[in-house]
Each structure stands twice: as structure tokens, then as C-alpha cells.
Amino acid sequence: MEGKVFRRKVYKIDDDGEKEFDQTAFDKIWPHLRVLARSSPDDKLTLAHGLNQSTLYTDKHACQKLKAEDQITVFPDRQVVAMTGDGTNDAPALKRADIGFAMGIAGTQIAKDAADIILLDDNFASIVTAAKWGRNVYASIQKFLQFQLTVNIAAVVTALVGSFAFAKSPLAAIQMLWVNLIMDSLASLALASEPPTDELLRRNPVNRSKSIVTVRMWANMLGQAAYQLTIIMFLLFGGPRVFGFPPGDQVEREEGINSEHYTFIFNSFVWMQLFNEVNARSLNGEINVFSGMLLNPLFCGILLITAILQVIMVEFGGKALHVADGGLNGELWGWSLLFGVGSLPIQQIINILFGQCKDAGVDGRVPSRIESSRRLSMRTVR
Image 1 (cartoon, rainbow, N blue to C red):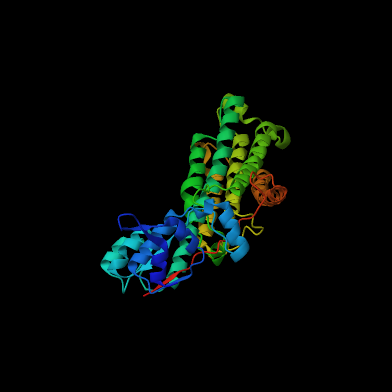
Image 2 (image 1 turned 90 degrees about the vertical axis):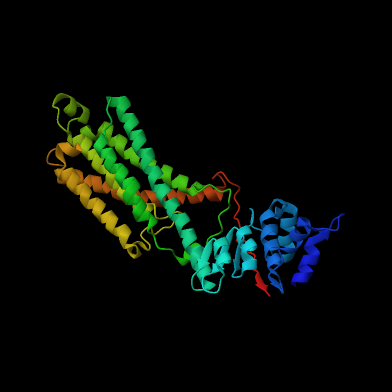
């Protein structure tokens, strides 16, 4: 469509002889529009404004008609508009769009000031790179939240149950500080350093109204927290009988020394978090949770350093870190690592159960798949 035809269709003359934008007419045009030739900077502003104001996605009948007649799928939320420009006259359109791209070499300073992202090399392919990194940041935040909330659920419930049952949490304050260091600082560095992949570009766009914590993330978090709490409760109430050491509350109350019982609980708890950190890299039920891990040396380094520090703390921390003198014996270390490794098959079980529930339509949503939108791809030709 040419610019003059576009302007004639989307503007109408009011009673005072002034041009007035017609949103209804615009909504009939934009799903079919691919190239706007011989356009002006005002046409770019009109496009950005009209798409931002469009509520076509709420008209189910119109969306179904577009799908049936033209195989056009309207994204089920407000349109996200990206606009490119290099001239001073493009500044209003760049400002009105959700994301404005200005040219770093050929662009004017006014266009750069109005834009959100500046393409330093004036290469349109850089827009794809920007989109990939933007999606990667969003995914990294989700991974961190998935890991952090799992640790929070398990740690809070463990502390509460221990306090109610024995008037003392099995995890000491200094140990909780170490858990928080793993959960906040080290995990944020590890999970936020994941490099972007092309798979991110193949995912469906995320709705503006969609929660950053998805249903699958809740399934992962609650499933892993349930496993960790099952192990911790077993060790807390049944550990002395099964493994043959005296109850931790009794030892610390009567002898005034740090117990092997509570040290075992602390060690098992931390190793379950470390192995679950590997699970947290997967957000969509991927089978191979180790995929691409070696491409992120920072993640591997932090995981290795955390594991080494945990061994040093348990074996040599003593009274300072509220662990038993001499640490744990080989058998208890083996069980601690086994409980940690158990997080990996548990994640696969969670994936299978979630998939079955989703197929049965009981995951809290209508059992339908949102199809990929046919994104509006427009070029302005002057």
C-alpha cells in the first residue's frame, strides 16, 4: 500500500474540517499490511500510534475471521511496536513506539535521543541480536526466580518445623547465611550469565499480562521443594534411628556441642540446592538439563567453587560454622551426595507428571496451544 492511500483510508474529516484518526478503519488495514511504500515520517507515527491503541485482539469474531480467511493470527495481547529511523523527522515515531531503533552512524542526534536502542553499526541484523539478548535477560530472571523460590520454600518450612518440634531450627543462623549466599549472590551470577541461544527466537512472544512465574515454573519449584522437604523431614525425625547417631537436639542440649545429626541435615540440604541449580537452567521441561552447560564457564566455575567451599565448611568449619567437630564420615557424605543427585531424576518425574496433567487439561488453563503470531513486518519506503 502507498502512503497516500494509507492516509486516505485511516483519516476522516470531522465537522470542523480537521483530519481525525479512524481507529476502526486502521484495524481493518494493519493485519494485512506488509509494506508501506512512499510513506512519510507522519505515516510512521500513525502506524506506531494505531498499533499501540489497537484492541483488535479482544474482538474474537474478527480474529477468527482473519484466521479462517487469510491465515492471519493476531497476537492475543496489545501489539508491541518496534520502529527504526535515522532522521530528525523520525523522532516522534521512535518515541511513540514501544522500542525505537536509531542508526548510530547515519542517524541524527535527535533521533538517537528519542530512541531506546542505537544500532552502532547501522546493521538491521543487529535488531535480531538485540531481541535475542532481551529474551535471554527475561529467561535468566526466570531461572533465578525458579531456583531462589525453591530454596526459600524448603528453608522456611524446615526452620518452622524444627522450631515447632524441637524449639530450635536444624539449620543454624550462620548456615542460613551460607545458604543465602548460594541462593542470592552466587546463583544470580551463575544463572544470569547464560549465553543466548537461537532457541530463544523460536519461542512464542510473552504476553504483557502473563506472570513471569509460569505454571511450569510453579510445578518445578513445588516438586523440588516437596522432594527436599521429604528428605529433610526424614533426616530430622528418622535420621538418628536409621543412621545410628544421637538426636541433634539432645546432643546440643545435654552436651553443648554441635551434633553430627544437624550437620548431616545441613550438608544434605546444601547439596540438594547445588544439584537443583543445574535443574533451574531449564524452564520448559527439557530432558537434558546439562545441555549447553559447558558453554557457560562462569556457571561451571561458581558451581565448582561452591561445592569445594561446602566440603571445607563441613569438614573444617567446626564451632564457627556450627558443624560437628571432624565433619562427617564417608558414609554420611555418600548419602548427602546421593540425596543431592536425586534432584536430577526427580526433575524428570516432574516433567512427566506435568506433561500428563497438561494433556489432560488440568493444569489450570484451557488445553489449547497459542499459535505463533504472524508478526507485523513493515518497511517504510520513501
